[in-house]
Image (tube, rainbow, N blue to C red; front, side, top):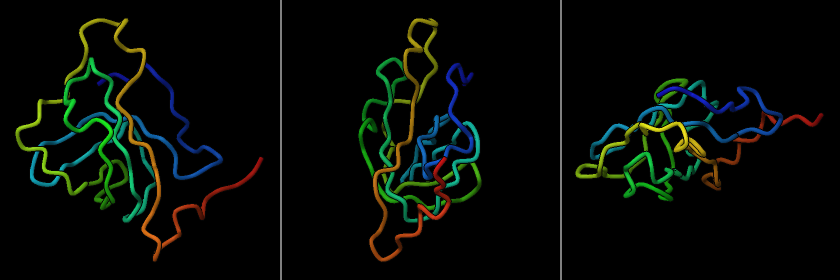
Length: 119
């Protein structure tokens, strides 16, 4: 998917929102971001999918993630049977893009924010 929106690769607050390129369907869902997400296993992430991109079943679901690469993580969401994520055919439909938004983390961990810096 083309990335018509800019997301800061290294914002001052981590973990940060990331743009989703692909969502793999399966018993465990795999998410690929447009560049390195800098997330750690155990972070709880919410998926936001604008209606033009399909896969409405996963919109606003959240779960702890397992990081598998700098740009990929899995979520314990069974997405078999979900509509596929698609790319809109019209540029006007790009008012927003699929995103993963950090929400929280597993309380016994509490180490996601170690990269935060202030100004």
